[in-house]
Amino acid sequence: MLTVRSRLPEPPRPPQPRRGRRPPGPRSRFPGALLVAFRRDPLGFLTAVARRYGDVAEFRLGPQRVVLLSHPDHVRDVLVTQHRRFHKGVGLQRAKHLVGEGLLTSEDELHQRQRRLIQPAFHHERIESYAAVMAAEAERTAARWAEAAAGGADPRALDVHREMQRLTLLIVGRALFHGDLEAEADDIGRALATSLDSFRRFTMMPFASLLERLPLPATLRFAGARRRLDAVIERLVAERRADGADRGDLLSLLLFAQDETGRPAVEEGQLRDELMTLLLAGHETTATALTWTWYLLARHPEVERRLHQEVDRVLAGSRAGAADFDRLDYTRRVLAEAMRVYPPAWVLGRLAVADYEVAGYRFPPGTLVLVSQWVLHRDPRFFPDPERFDPERWTEPARAARPRFAYFPFGGGPRGCIGEPFAWMEGVLVLATLARRWRLRLARDGAITLQPSVTLRPEGGMPMILEARS
Image (tube, rainbow, N blue to C red; front, top):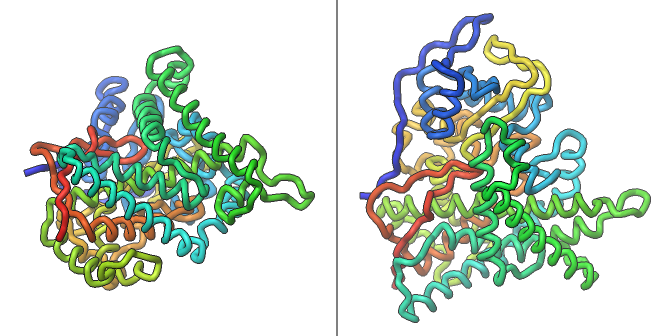
């Protein structure tokens, strides 16, 4: 049986301490011990802290004071009620090396202005128009798999994580940029993997800013990856400018927008940052969510059988479309449960820029506040038997019985993911389209190791076996 390595202690939660006392939390026996433990196993570390010390826990990662909040009310407080007291955390600050001051990393008035400008590209009517692109690209992937199988390709050679990255990249390229990224998909995938490895390597590392300026192999690889991704953006922009057509997509929205004086609303550097952000963030998280969904379906044949029954009934041999989204209710529940068990975004960090008070504790500016999807999504108070994969958790009555922020795969509040409706439509239509023709079986025994970087990836990919459905 294929299992995922996990070190998740489950001691009972103690009651919260009284006002005025320092929050409980692990203390370091020697300088840097907790940082080493966190870097070695961040998922296990955060889970152990939350289970042992409760909903408000404090510790230090090197010189950084950190607070882990593990109750839905506290998540709402950080992301919604008191969001103005925070800026993005250490990880996304470091992401500026790649995406600059794009929507993902910018702050305050700049972020608000960017969000207002980009929002029309993700309105409901626009999302429905993207559905045809999503289904068409998924059909092309299914056909490519069939062609490879007919040509005698080894069915065990399929890395589903890589396949989902390729597919979601092509969807973003066509839907948001009206561009064809087929020829560059493998290069982009390698460049993205190099960039994420750099983030994982340097985040929370002492003297990281100094190390990143040295000509080390890792920094040179990252610089090369950035140049490759920049070249893709430059090509897309150059082609659209040469074409001169407003195609109503995101690229046109940013390229041709004007301010009240008639000048371009988005400067050249800002245009690059926004496009890079949406190109990368727009496909990575959905690809990761789909990868874990295929993994879980392969391990739970009864869930897979019900999904196939719904897909066969709803699509009846036809191509999926926007009108099918609401009818694919069980498919959507499967995707939701997969993002609970393996959330693509597994932790959110916010750096306090003003005093912040929660549960009677006051934290000064400079405190790093963490809220973790991995921890909350597996909290037995809100999800009984949390490691069990059960799409029935997402019926309307079950959802209504839980606090809103017990589940937040896309964040929330004014900084919530602007592409969430896009991701839901894409995930459901891709699952339905591929499941109509294929089953995917796990290709290896042993453990799949989790790689918690910017997203929660499977280390070494996800090798699976293709089985055609009759």
